[in-house]
Image (cartoon, rainbow, N blue to C red; front, side, top):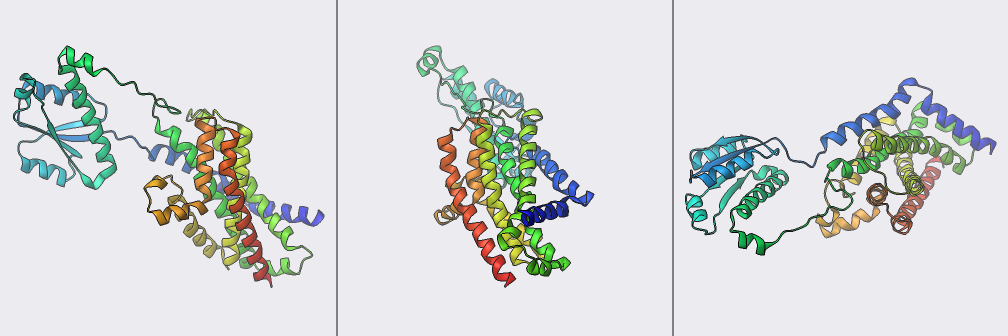
Length: 367
C-alpha cells in the first residue's frame, strides 16, 4: 500500500504541479462543451428561399405569405424564370425554390387538387430535407384550411406527443452526448501521455528498477485520469442542468456507475496507446487516431442503423456507443437499473480487454 500510495501521489502531482497543465485539464473541456452545445444544432433556421410564382393569384400569394411568416425562413427571393431559379440555387443564393403551377389558383377555386413544386439544393442534403418538410407542412396546413368544412370534419386531426423531449430542443439530445464525447477525449489524452512522458523524460528506466510491481505502476497511472474524468463528468452534469436547463430525470447513482466503468474503459485505451508510443507527440497523434473513429462509430453523428452491416458490427467494440445510451437514458427518460446494466456489461468486458491488453503490452515493453 505504501508503494501504491507513493505511485498515485507521484502521478497526481505530475498531472497537477504545472499551473498550465491544470488549466488545460479543465478549460478546454468547458470550451468544447459550450461551443459544441451551441454549434452542433439540429435546427434549420435563417433559410433563404426562392419563389417562382407562375400563378400570381390570391391563393399563391397567401402560400408565399405563410412561408414568409415562418421563423425558419429569412428572405424570400422572387424568381422570374426557370433559368433564374437554376442560377439562384447553383450560386447558393437560396437553399430551396418553390415553383407554383400556373393552374394553382384555378384548381383551388374549382376544388381540384393543386400542387406546388420544390427544388432543393442537394449539396446540403440533410438541411434540404428538413426545409422540404417545413414547406410541405405549411402547404398542407393551407390545404386543410381551404378544404370544405365537411372534408375537414371527415379528415379529423392528428395528436402528436413527443416523449422525453416535448419541445424538440436539440440541446436536450446533444448535451448528454457531449458529456460522453468530451470525457472520452480528455481521459484518453491524459492517459496516453503518461507512459510516453516517462520514456521521453528518461524516468521509465527508474520505474523498471524500482520495487514497484507492474500492477502498482498501472494502477498509479490510472488514478489521475480517472479523477479527471469523474471531475469533468460531475462538472458537465451540473452545468447541463443549471446553464442549459437540460432535465436530469434518472438516478445519479446509475450515472456515476456508468461513468466509472466508462472511464476505466477509456483509461485502458489510453494506456494501450501510451505503451505503444515512445514520445508524447506520438502519444498525442495516437490518441487522435483512436478517438476520431470511436466518435464516428458511436452513433452520435449518424444513427448506427444507417451504417453498412459490417460497420455496425464494429460499433459493438466502441465504448462510447453504450455510454451514449446510458447518459441519454438517465438524463431524459429515467432509465431503470435493468436497462442501464444491459448497456453496462459490454462496457465491463471492453474495460477488462483494454486494461488487460495494456498491462500485457506494458510488461512486454519493460522486458
